[in-house]
Length: 255
Length: 255
Image (cartoon, rainbow over all chains, first blue to last red; front, side):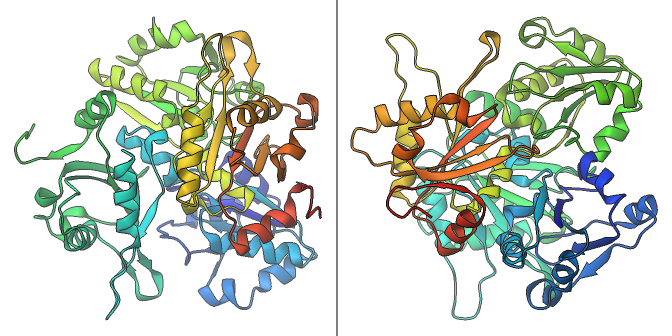
């Protein structure tokens, strides 16, 4: 049996049910590669009195020995967030099923619902998109089309920022803003919201004009993870909530 | 301090962090009204050796004594799913802030990311909609417009089903399918996916032609909660996954 277990958004965000299960499992692995990952699992190793074995990208994608073991023993694979948000993990389940391994998922918190901490109503979000790092001779723009299509339907867009774990690169809001400004020639994007280190003690929510927020450097935005939102027109209740708790960076109507 | 704590999708889905916090809190309330709620919290009361006080809709919306207490003491309010998915809970936080009460959210699993158990890629979902119970002289159709708009962009639509807790009414997939068929005069909706009792031991995923699935009665679909998806064109990987794990009800290409 293969248990795919979500660790949620921050330390000890895994479910109580998953924690109880882990007490009875000998083979525990963790995928630190697919998503942004900043969990120190020492507390978990201590609490369980077991080693949690980190997997490399190769371990996960090419030589999945943990799948071999799962044919005859219980195996837990820990992943940050809610497991199936990353298609890599759906692939792992599919491969397990093809190998006759039963699977079970333990859900946990995810940015897909937690983004409501901004006060924006979850049912007003359209399709989510990711901003990738531009490469030489390749400046992707599909995420921008998503923003604009959502805007036309008066929907918010959640923008996930690129993670290149193998190069230790995690896109900073400043980099994301610069990409957005470069691509948005008609200046359709006026305001953005940034949520940093959601569910951590150091969580921050910033709201303001994109050109005001572009004035800050990478350091100002601090450690990852960060998520951006390009809001549609805000409902009264959304704006009231956002203004109550965010750091505001607006030019004209500065609060 | 007011702690808003997500219970997640099923028994013991709350986070370990939240569970540890509850050990140190005297005033623990639970909102059983806003969302579908099928948690038996006896295990929690036993584990904590404390009473968990259920709140009525009136307690929550009109006379929030728990907010009064939160001015001077720590108060925990438990809610199913991830807290801020329901705007009622955003309103509670806003009211707390206005009363000078500090707030903190403990996230948990939610259908918004767990819907990926269907194998559908989460980034291919457009705006979510809810199917309400039709009322006399009022047959709402905005959810249908959302489905069609998403379909035109080749995006999946997650459809949440109405809950009328005060009347003990939880919309069954059969009722939802009948509403969809009635409203979809041009027969644009061909296939649907139903996920029942997600994250419970009795979880089921059904996939098929809407007219095939319409043949079953309420009982066939079992106990709530249920969620529907109107899929866009399925990617190869999505279809492979879905066919591997769903109960299939297709007419022509029956598997």
